[in-house]
Each structure stands twice: as structure tokens, then as C-alpha cells.
Length: 359
Image 1: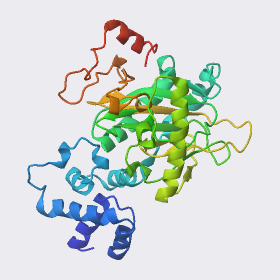
Image 2: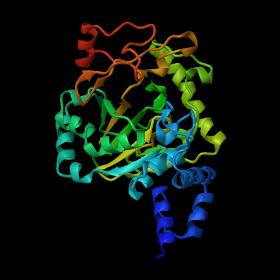
Image 3: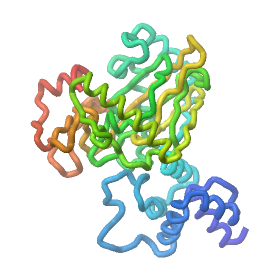
Image 4: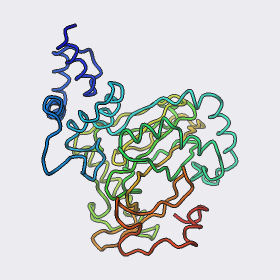
């Protein structure tokens, strides 16, 4: 292969292209999605001319770089290996990726964890925040491969703050995590779902809509409802919201995909990707799994379904970093570690948060 061909192949790989390094096949791949061609032009511009010098720098945007409209430029500046570039591109385009944790889960960890949690299900479906009492749950939340991947994608330190352990499928309607957890800046939140056993079409696998993370972030206000701290009012609004989500997928022509997962595979999804739980087709089947939710450093954290921005009524969250067991300040970059209209967290409140007695 000539020097120019080598350079061309390297550029294709660095752009996240996983196919054969054939110019015609690459052009066909670019044409599959209009944004790829635009990003390729951005990417080449940086390679050929260096970073653009201007008053505005895309790295200063308050959005994860993987969701940036200048993704092609930023990708070129990061100069990732082919494998990493491919992973990042898949997340950028689909809002979801899989990573392999089988070496760390399939050594007996999954079976031991299932056994240890067996008597802890007061709720018939899940246990929340078992990391506080179970070291294996905490270990999964802190797997280096998960944290490294999240920090590659988001460009900030990950802050694991909640675990959910499931013994059966949720059969949950399509939704985004941004209705439950959001951040300022937006989109600095994601979920990681780890299979503790094989998940097939019959025991309630996850489903998602590729590309749905690219849609605007919608909350109750957008669907003509209001957030509420009252559970009955919030539930009524949520029913309208999930119906809206279903209609939204049809309106945009997005297609549902089902995720079958082997024990030890992890699924990372963007906060705004539409996802849920498929029906359980085989009665009595378990679906043991763990979800960990992650925020990212230097953000404010809040609960949209209990907030009303149009009334300046925002329920900020006091979260505990599972890594450090410390309360995380609600602060953006150099802002003071308090939120407008709120008081600094007191010692008593902080103790309740650390003990899991408050959210």
C-alpha cells in the first residue's frame, strides 16, 4: 500500500470507520447518514489545517463532546485509535454501545451477587442502592473499564450515584432517563446496564430507539403537564409523558431495536435515548442485572419530573459519589458549590444523604 493509501486508511480508522479501507466502500458508508459527510469534512479540515483559530472554541461548549455539533473537529483533535474512535462514533450516532465485562463478571461474581441479594427484594422487581451494603454491587459500579469508557465518551470524571439490581424484567414503557435525572449542563448523565445472566428475547430484554438521543430533551412542561412532588400527580403526568414518547417515535420514524445480552456484557446508554423493558414471554424466567446511573463532575443535578422551570421551581438532588462515599456539590465549573435559591447542604442533611435516608 502506498504512503497516501496508508494515510487514507489511518484517517478512515481515526474517523471511526470499521469497514475495509476501500475508498468506494467508505464513500458509500459516508452517504448512509448526512451528518457523516459533514463531520468528515470537519475532520479532514483539522488534519490538513490544524485546529481553527477563532474567538469560539468548540471545546468550551457546555455539552458532552460526543454530542457536539462540532464532533468531527473534536474527534480529529483527540486523535483516537481506531477501536476507540469506532466506539465513540457508535455512541455518537446511536446513543448506546456495548462493552465486554465477561472476564470480571463470569468468574463467579455474578452468581455470588445473585445469591447475596436473594433475600433483599422488598420490592418484587428491584433493590435500589444495594452498593451501600454489598461490596460486589459497588465493585461493578466502579469497574475501571466502565469508568474509562465513560470518561472517554463524556470528557469528564464520572460520578456513579445510584445502583438498581433487578431479578426480573421491568417491562417498562419507553422513556428517557432525562425525565428522572438531568444535569446542568444538560446530557451529562448516562446509565450502564450489566447482564448477570444471559438475556434473550423471552425474559424481558431491553429495547431502545437508535438515534433518539439526538432529539430535544422533553419534560412534563413540553407535553402540557407540570412536575410535582405529589406522587399521584406525578404518576398522572408520567402516563401522559410515556404516551407522548410512543407517538414521538412514530412521528420521527424511529425503529425499535431489542438488545439481547450475554452474561457479563454491559450496555451504556445516553441519558436522552428512548429505552425500556420488553414483555416477559416466558413465565418464571429471571433477568438478573445491575444498572448504575452516572452523573459527571462539575454539574448541577436535578429531578425534572418534580421540577417546573417556568416557575423557577427546581428540585436539585443531593447525590453521593459511590467512588468516595461523599456528597457531591451542586456546582458548575467555577460556580460556588450551592444552587441559586437553595441553601448550602447542612451537616444533618449531608449525613442523611450518606446513609441513604434522603435523595
